[in-house]
Length: 395
Image (tube, rainbow, N blue to C red):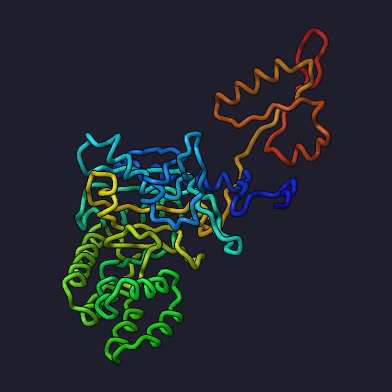
């Protein structure tokens, strides 16, 4: 193993410089305020969790987990998502609180990525979980809240794609007949590799009717009318229930006045295997990949011995900042430059200005190399350098 260069970072890790940090802080503050106003209470969980509980329940690929051992030999993981940790808390520390629970979070998550992928291994995410409510109203609430949070952050041009994993599973199994074959097709859909999907379908020993049904799935993207087309491809009970769920959800979203941002996408497949129903992804006009996602997971809490239906979403702050396409200007600061003789006076002046809400830097004159550069760096520069006879100030 070669020794890292002095300025090298681990693969997938990033530095956050002041201007970008300011942008993320502004976005985060706006969204936290909106989420709180909808009655969601913030929660924090530890960065380290047990592999045998949260690690396995997270449904993240094993090779994407950051693992380490504690002193007792237990395998730990850096949390790869927040849904599984919140499910653990809902079934333990919050077990005496009645459902539904409305919880929110803002945290860093960790997933080991392939070197050539160029994706961050540590990223900041905000989101909510609505635990203990299995209604279309709950699905509509979290989607409408996600829309509202994105708007509060300043995002104007975006779209939410809505699907249902129950419909995809019903169609694939109805045609190919086994989970293994269905999983191969789901993988193409998850990767949005529609060319590969078409080629794989054409390679299968299917009747022309069944081949047409599988290829027809790719056309089920658009307005609410696509649900009518979906009924013609598969007519079993699971598919009918999924389409009924989506019809009810659309009615809820109409009530919130956000359906203008929605489109139906029945090829939508998520990377998390614990999703059981409605799923969705949010796209900004500047990005070709989702900046937010979520869905219904009605079986995850059973793994923590407190069965409950649940839904939620997560928003990637790094991707949202990219979608916004602008960096917030750093706040204006005043610099007070002082000599040793007038340091105390300058300290008092800085304290008085800070009480008034001003951002103040106190700079010793001996530490200044170039006054012109200093003047350009700050909105205002105030000098406390010498003293007049009799102790009066002379700026």
